[in-house]
Length: 121
Ligand SMILES: [Zn+2]
Image (tube, rainbow, N blue to C red; front, side, top):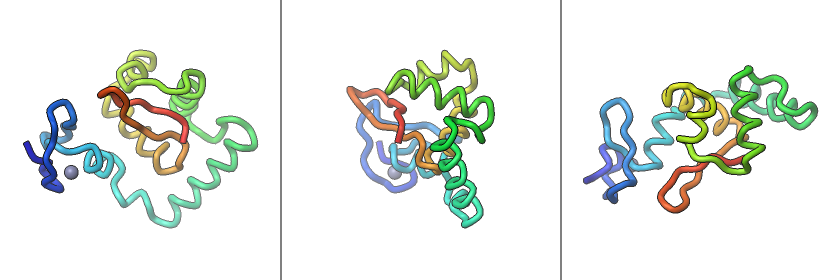
């Protein structure tokens, strides 16, 4: 099977479905964090969020964002499935929030033993 965006060969268990497309991890990240988020305004507000985080914990984030950030901070690393279970939200919702965190370089995803984990940047 090939990634429908970059055409790279996908191994079984390393495919991501989004909007009916089958993608590799990189393209999935690209699709869930579209480049429109990278305008100068977004970058400056992202920087101010980071500054706020450094100064006073996770203030300046929405309630859900604070929750996500705290859970990841407490766990060190956590799988997407576990995080969804704790938060009791839809995967699409988490994807949306994750795009924000990734953009602000607060939280990143990595793969270990075939699972996707979230951890602090
Ligand atoms: Zn791809």
